[in-house]
Length: 166
Length: 131
Image (cartoon, rainbow over all chains, first blue to last red; front, top):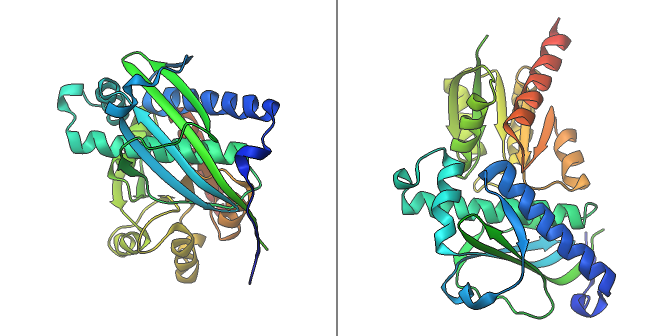
């Protein structure tokens, strides 16, 4: 069944109120995900992005009624405690491969939770998360930074289009 | 009574997490089998009898939707309750999976307590319908 495709200049259509609401939702949901499943406390923090070039970053592309990508970055120091808490192990028992898988899972859960909350009537399909360098643009994204007990976390979502599915 | 469970998820760390939080929550977990997609899960079900199935949706080879369709064809959904666990909390997806025969739908993030409550609900509902 063919569908009507309507590309929107997402960044240009957002007003300031929506911008603030989406950013607040992003931070709130990230905090809930980290607390509920990764047993980590996260609080909203001022953006200071000097650490991003050295971050462990993950990209999740999504398509369906809404298309775009979510970027997640963590300071390397934050990873052992998050991975070991999720796995129920001590940090020294947690291998690099396992830690990498946990961070991919964190990105997957964050992306699903945030998109479902922002657009509950949408139809979404998430690609598998991919480890990558942080290459998310600064402009035209919803973004927040969070401080963790050990390190920091940044999330950005870029919406590239909206499709009206039949 | 301890319940035997089949966990179907392509992420080994998520399977491990679900198994661990079931125990942490106080759910009476007996034998626990794992599969990384629907195809593997169907093979496991030929080998092992289970009391409840927990399945993800987005998986390679055979996704959760196709897995539920196959379970329905086999008549398994009439005897084994199935709980979907997914990051996708959109209404369309939830209604689709329930219409395919899932007994429950949990979205991530979830707490150990909420997982236990949902497991007990789907198991209790199924036992009540048999009585």
